[in-house]
Length: 268
Image (cartoon, rainbow, N blue to C red):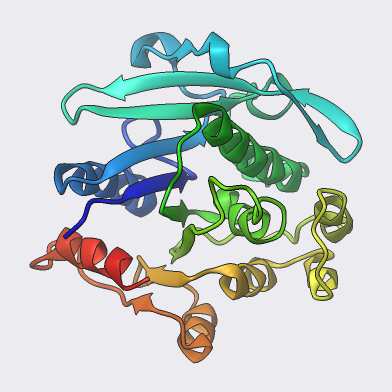
C-alpha cells in the first residue's frame, strides 16, 4: 500500500483542548496514520484558551505575516507550531488577534455562540490552505474534522481547484456530535461568494443551520466518515443517498479501527 500525504484540518485536538469524542479522535487518528507510513500535516485554530507556554507553542516567522481579507476587512495570519513528543506529531496553529485571542473556543462563558464564528471558520480554512501553499506541500487527501473546518472543502473545489498543489486532492468530511444551535450570519453566502466561490446553491448558506451547512459541504466532499453515534441522523442519511464512499460509525475499540480509515482513504 503506497503511503499518501494527508492534511488534517481539525476543530480540536487533545491535549491542547479537553478530551472530547472529536478531540480524542483527531489526536489518535493523526498518530495512527503517521505510524502507518503516511506523511501528515495537521492544523487547528489557536484558541485563546490554549496555554502557549505550557504547550510550547512558538511562531513560525517564515509562514506568518500574510493578510487575509474577510468581508472587506484585513486580518493578519499568524502561524504557530507545537509538538506532541509522545507521538512525534507536529501541530500547526492558525492564529489571529481578531478571531482567536478570546479565552474561549466557540462560545462565551454563558454558552452563547460567537456571532463571528462564520468569519472565524472562513479565516481558518483560508489560513490552512494558504499555509500549505507556502509549505509547497501537495496533499493527496484533506480530511476535515469539525464544523470549524467545514469551509475548507468549498475552497478546495471552487477557489483552489486550479492550483497544482490541490488539483487532484480528495476531500473527506467527518460527521460527528458537534452541532451548533444558532444559525450562521445572514450574509454567510455573500461572504463566501466574495472569496471567489460561484455556486447557485450558495443561497442555502444564508443564515445557515448546522444541517444546511453540512448538506452543502457533503456535496463538495469525495468521502464521508461517520465518527459519532450522535451524528445528525438526517445528515448521515443524506450522505448515504449521495452514493459517495462512506466509512460508517465504528466503536473506538473496534478491531482494525484505524486500519479501516487507512483503507478508506485508498478507496477515494
